Image (tube, rainbow, N blue to C red; front, top):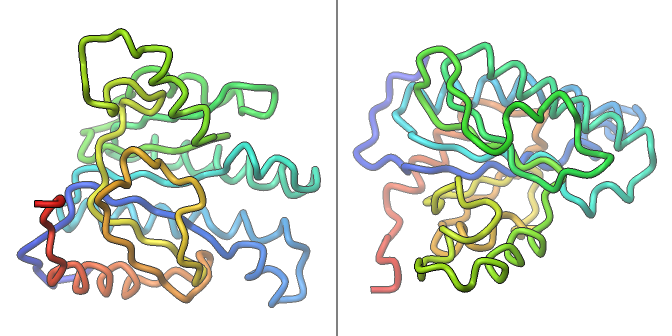
Length: 220
């Protein structure tokens, strides 16, 4: 358990858990073998976020574009996403799954779509993007362009998810990869070189330390 106390804690953290396939190849495994090793890190990160008072977190599961990968890889990351959601459903979290419901969308996660599901004490809002497509997300706003609200966050398909303050991406890449474009507009971005299955507590704590000095002006 971390005893460090931070004066500034992001209200909402986005998580891009990248590097699963590269992690597997580095260990002479098949690419699809890396996804199952990303479940436990997600549970540990959830625990750390609750401990430090984070109110909301969004995990980037898989995108519509990811479904063009070989069938074995698709099956593996879908299974890992289902296991991750079900693991946190056994904890104290309010869970929402957002994504385009097609043949690849896992039926096991349908109960968590539409409305947020309170699990246990509901200590933190947890969002999962499953079969997510940023274009589909934003196009929903056009279908509601006659609505009275002028806030795009009220109109997009992911409208149950609030604006993010900090995005942490594992795997060394420095790009959003279509991650919630409306909610990421003012988010600070912190890359972690380590692959997601190699998650360590210090990665999260280093991100929080870095965030202490971020100048959050929201354009003002």
